[in-house]
Amino acid sequence: MAENCTRKLIVEICNANNLMPKDGQGTASAYAIVDFAGQRRRTKTKFRDLNPVWDEKLEFLVHDIGSMASEILEINLYNDKKIGKRSNFLGKIKLAGTVFVSAGAESLVYYSLEKRSVFSQVKGEIG
Image 1 (tube, rainbow, N blue to C red):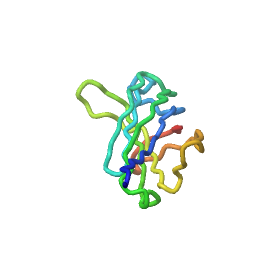
Image 2 (image 1 turned 90 degrees about the vertical axis):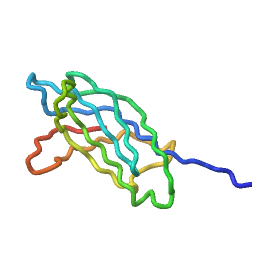
Image 3 (image 1 turned 90 degrees about the horizontal axis):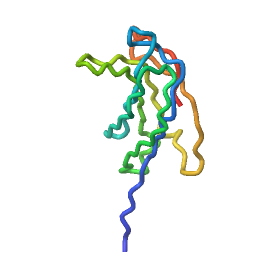
Image 4 (image 1 turned 180 degrees about the horizontal axis):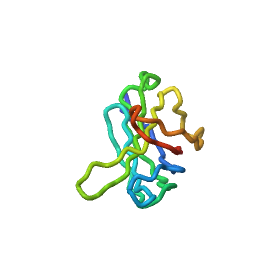
């Protein structure tokens, strides 16, 4: 009898360091949006903190284990404006599926935030 086994990719958003202030008061209220294989998850907002700590685990279903190496995980950080205005971009990273590790082999890795375009102003890193 074949057993239906669902695999998951668990992404832990730990923290960010030295984010660029975006709220006009020298701070930022950061949250992350994580995209993988057509699925999107969002962290909580960490208000007025240039070094936010989330420690949130986000789960994504893996539909085809054979194509994991060609998948891309994208994390975008934004400043939460809360009052109807668009959120400000704080930076992004893209990770190829080839860097994913099996359970038990996890480690905290920091990635420098990248610009979305030549006009983006970003600094900092995410772990």
